[in-house]
Length: 177
Image 1: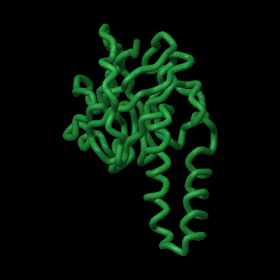
Image 2: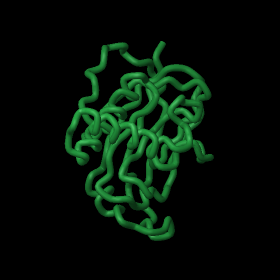
Image 3: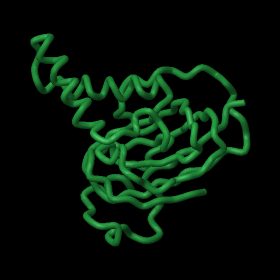
């Protein structure tokens, strides 16, 4: 099992391949601007752009580019990942409806095999690999430890993370045949 502790300065996190098409600098501001423009064109309330942005994240999960989730607060979090020795059962997935659920799953394309996890404001920037897997397609299962994520929210420094605490998120990667 691989583990990483990271400071997240965003209210969104994601797991993705380092070579994913969405791993580009300026992802969040560009997509928020696009959401604002969409809401303005429809004559809607500017606050609704957050829902439009979340819809983009759901779409990227359906396109197998990233699995994103929301945070209540930025903080210091530990994420563990492991590669399953078994193959995926190939059952079709229910589409993700929103990015707020604590448990979810999505298929991910992994062309480089370098899986990273980060705050969405860090897309396009160098980031350490969480786990290296053979290039291919994987089903990613995300599980949140809610009490731990709450405990670690608002931490300022990695040194503030309590050694020995269980991880905030667990990601299981199951290869497709």
